[in-house]
Image 1 (cartoon, rainbow, N blue to C red):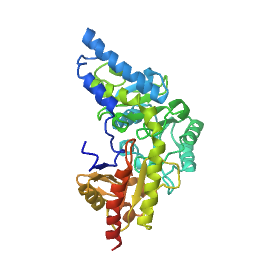
Image 2 (cartoon, rainbow, N blue to C red):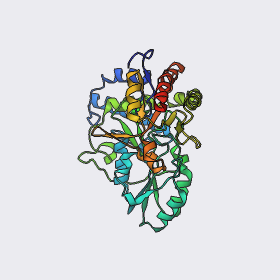
Image 3 (cartoon, rainbow, N blue to C red):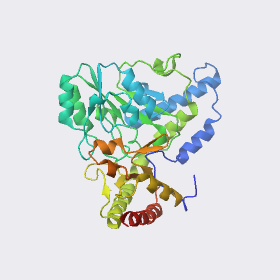
Image 4 (cartoon, rainbow, N blue to C red):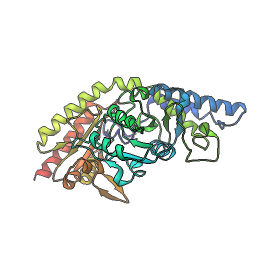
Length: 370
């Protein structure tokens, strides 16, 4: 990572720096070279490392290790749930991650309100007429705005119609505690690199006893739920990161204060700026802010040139920046959605880094107002 004295990394929702404990685990993990499916000593050592990590990930979300299926990350976990859990119809909130929306027909998207919270009345109405069994996908925390969804109410409605619930919880661990039993969902997606681990490892956590059809076949790995030799190093790093989440959660009170102070300063600098989902419960680290008059891609470029890393409230596809589907679903005009950026803090973000962002953004706000 670049020198933190000159580079402000404020893009934790995109990916996080590896934790020191993860770096140490990876260094040791290079000596674990056996195939976890081999029966010799080197293979057994690799298997033991995978299972130790599985224990840590399971403990992080309050389940038994047998419920954890290791994958390549959140995208694969979402696909495995939505395609592998038997269902006659699949529904999702309109603000889900693209890796969920790719598996849901447009007519089965449930609208959200102006804060990005799912319309529970609409969900109830749709499930009452849906072929059974239905599967409902609702994320725990939005990756762009940080807004938390009312999972308990979603589950309550789903159960009334015999529907199952899949929860994309990728953004939550490391920022808030996650207990699958308390959420009462049927499946849960996780990704290691969002909580201090490495890219390329994740998990789908299943309700005990829930059957799932493997999408990746040809081997007996992961109890025949996901074929392919396990990414041992990535899984070891995932376990090391999972073991640190309680400590990371403890840092969130400080992160929240930094976030709140930064939001106050942003509005003071530019009273016409709009902070999305500010009025609802959110992740403690996330700000999605629109600056009318200055496109998000221009903001990103100028911030990057000044040594500040953030993301846009829009997705890039083939080099073309398009308005955020999340903000559009919230009823934000396209002209405003094109001017939104996401600032996401982390457990080791400093006051100096937020001040660096604000100093640059003050100039952006002045140019937008000119």
